[in-house]
Image 1 (cartoon, helix red, strand yellow):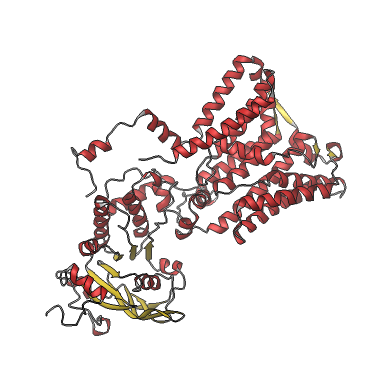
Image 2 (cartoon, each protein chain N blue to C red):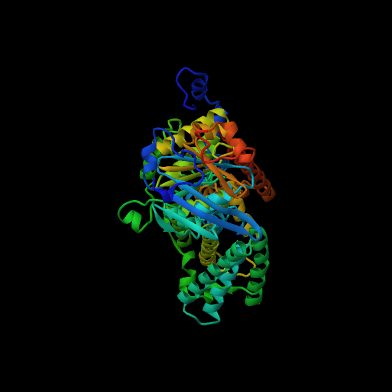
Length: 281
Length: 341
């Protein structure tokens, strides 16, 4: 890691055994991001680095700027100042569509799946594939069989065996299975970064387990994952690094190895301050 | 983890037998037009047993011809209802379009084909106006089309001065859909053929193209559809415009069928088309249903009407039966929406 990309308040920053991941250029970076809403400061000069092959959790109290940060990185907001780079190249996202075209997919809390449509149709919604030849080009006929097959592969790639029939309507699925469909949709189509907003919020223990396993699978497939969550056990289970937002700024980046949950929450609430020497202390 | 390993209670549960009722619920969830199809076949059998001439080729030909207008309008109505909307102005748009076609050809001395195209174009524009009001002003479709129902009806009456135009004054092209051919005593008009073609084309578009998917997606959950990248507002606008186009074509069929352009024709076309769509298993809440169900629904209403009148039963019983069917259809829809895996 070169000095310029080094995070200001990171501890050792790098989880043991994963040094190679952090030796590469970050896939997505934010530098000195500032956004204000009238007199309210949303982000007060926040830095964030995200690497391919890691799960970066973003935690913080309500109003700490988690959502604002993520919205700046995914094109929902445009920061007032600061720089966003992908693979070192500066990028500007004016709308979510720009970020999506650059390979950043967001899975919203409300999931954006259509209950009445089947799994394959949902995966390919607004990106439908047509049949080859005049059936596709003239009659605009959909390649339903092909899309079903590729949808099955996309779900398999997430390590999920419980969903077999891609022709099943999404409304017949459980909450966790719907989450799988939404994530499979985000992870397909050559995306590089997947942002998950509270993916386990409405799920039971078993279903959460399935979703966490899927998040780790996404990472092992080489994607960069941002996980926004209020559920500390889930964060500590799935994350490689944890970015803590506090009062519009970054209170530090820790790892599940360097700090336990109690310390993390203490930093998040301001009861404890993270110092550069904290890890060795 | 959530994967069920064999031998666990969860695996046992996954393999459980569905009760017969659950199986029916699943079947109807996948094929919502099955229950109306059963009703159509049963009523057909009952009427044929009661009055064998009901099933004669001649009588069936008439039943089909009488279904054609409502069946044509109900295609547009299905599109609108699939987007969780409703169109009360169907009949008004059709009648306005019909009066304009006939009047341009007769009083305007315009070539028939041009009058026809202007009439159909006007209907498309009327549908587009509905769509603009729904998508730009965010008004509820019920209110928009309730308003345009009155507006278009009034314009049609003002424009035509309330008087009919007989087909003898009209060019051949406007009358051609009333003509037809016989297949073994079963008489088909070109209008019926055109309506069948419209069903085939729109059925293909809805089930086989990306645009068809968008119609269902927008009807089921417009916000999620938008987040997924579906141009929700544009799809909605297109649905209303295409519905208008279909009503314009229905106007052409109606001139041929009625042998005249009459400003107060089929005044309850909106309720009849909604009835056909709902009996056909399409959900009023949007996102669910098949076009073939609408055709079955339109046929059921007409089979009841013809069958009961041939048996000499009071028409009020037909109206009563239609009402019961509508309520049963919506109740079934509510039930199958609660389907579980």
